[in-house]
Length: 90
Ligand SMILES: [Zn+2]
Image 1 (cartoon, rainbow, N blue to C red):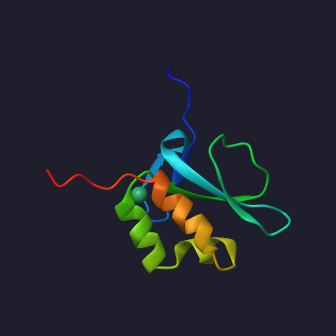
Image 2 (tube, rainbow, N blue to C red):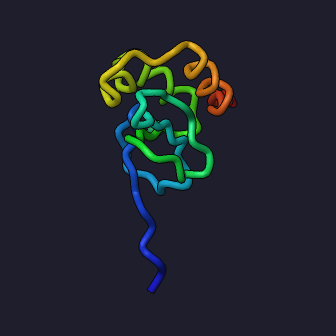
């Protein structure tokens, strides 16, 4: 039996994906939003695919700010944009 893989929902496409394939954003108990590349930061997490399309969708629907109950700083949006891969046009 394979180990059970923790699944999380992407805020962009709403698909369930293995946690390791998603970008984790986290809001700390102090109310600071940051990206968590090791999956160990404390706080409330939200997940996104490494896909620029999912990020775009999440921005459009304000899914991130809703998940955290606060506006997301531009610096974090930039970090997210850098962490996501644009969909190839091929
Ligand atoms: Zn997605």
